[in-house]
Structure formats: C-alpha cells, structure tokens
Amino acid sequence: MGFQNVIIVGNVGKSPVQNEKGNLVKFSMCENDTWHKIKCFDNLADICLEYVKAGDKICIQGKISYYTYTDEFNNKSTTVSINANRIEFMSKKVKKVFDSEELPKLNHVPIDEIPV
Image (tube, rainbow, N blue to C red; front, side, top):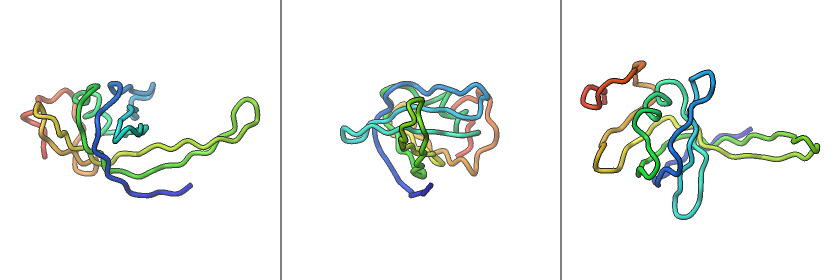
C-alpha cells in the first residue's frame, strides 16, 4: 500500500454519507471530468457532514490510498481513494479552511464560531 500527497479542486458529486460508527464520511468529487472517492475521518468528517453539499466547489488536500481486495469470484481488484486531511470551501457561501490536525471536536457549531 502506497501513499502520495495530492491537492484537488473540484465539485462535490453527492452529499457526504457517514459510516455506521460515525467516524468516517465518504463522498465523490469531480475534477476536470475525473471522479475521485474522498474519505474524511473524525473531526474533518463532522465538518464535511455539516457543511459539504452536492455541487459545492471545494479544495481537498490528502493522501492517495490504494486498497487491494478479492471479490466473491476470487478476482483481485484495486480501488483508489483520497484520505483528506484538509478542506477549503471555494464557494461564496462558505469561505473557510479546515485542517484535521487543528480542529476540536465540533457538534453543530454555527459557521461564524468555527476556529480557523
């Protein structure tokens, strides 16, 4: 499994979806006609759930993750996703930058009170 740092600017496809444990949020993002799978964890996952919506223009910084698995027909496949560690909102309605290492745990805090 290898990791590479990336920065992607594009539009969110579908609004983020949270996993059952509540510590992971996934969504898709389109950059120049290329779709990417984005994963956000912990504090950044909370931010994405609350503020990221389909159609939003955002900038994601993170690491590319490659996962290899075997399906039910015993075929090996590899999937690629980006584990985000920073998000910047590029749309006019929200102009904030969130870094997963600097954020406290947030629970429905008004946008004006979010630390930057």
